[in-house]
Length: 85
Image (cartoon, rainbow, N blue to C red; front, side, top):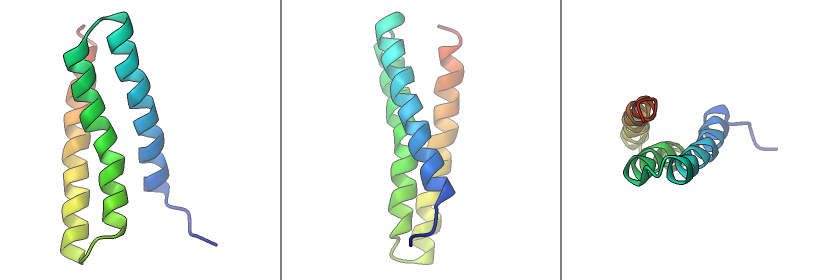
């Protein structure tokens, strides 16, 4: 039986919500640039967490998760920007 990975599960669920947000931004506000940015950064968080699972070294693991944190910060910026649209 595989051990549950909470971070992996949460970032996947977050990515699904980001896709929905991006879709809504495009359909409702016609804000394509912002939708694309939030989609790119928001979905990359989970992808980087998945990559970190199979890191080649401890340094590679730390690097992948550090980049995921940067993407999360950027995503927060874009989400905050959507509140102004």
